[in-house]
Amino acid sequence: MSESDPLITTFNFVLPRGLMDQAGNVHRQGTMRLATAKDEIIADKYPRERKSPTYRTLLMLSRVITRLGTLTQVTSEHLEGLFTKDLAYLREFYNRINQQGNVLIATQCPQCSHGFDVELVLSGKSSATP
Image 1: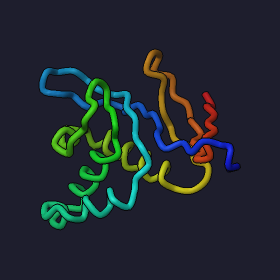
Image 2: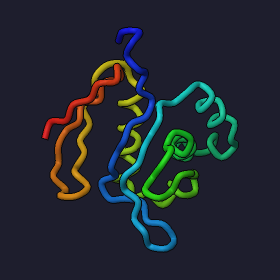
Image 3: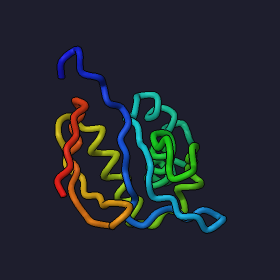
C-alpha cells in the first residue's frame, strides 16, 4: 500500500440467513469496521464475558458492526437472536478482515442469491469472483 492509497476500514457483508427483529423484519446486509485495541479492552471489562467466550464474541461484534439492515446501532442483545450459521459467518468475516493481506470470503448476491467469493484486500482494492 502506498501513502496515496486510502486506508479501507469498513467492509460490507450479507448474512446467510439474517437477523430477525421483534417486528419480524429480517436484516441481512451490513457493514463491519476493523477492530481496534479499544474494542478488545472494552469487551474484556464485562463480567458476563468472563463466564462465556461466546458472549465476548457478541460484544466484539456489536462494537464493530456499524450497520445491519436498518439497524444503525447493533447491540449484543440484538446479536443474541442470530442463527448459528450467521454467527459463524460473522466470526469468520471478522477474523478475515482483521488479518493482514488478501482474503476470500464466500457471499451471495442479495437480489438473485447467486453465491460467489469476494477477495478482501486490506490495501483498499477488492475484486469479486462470481
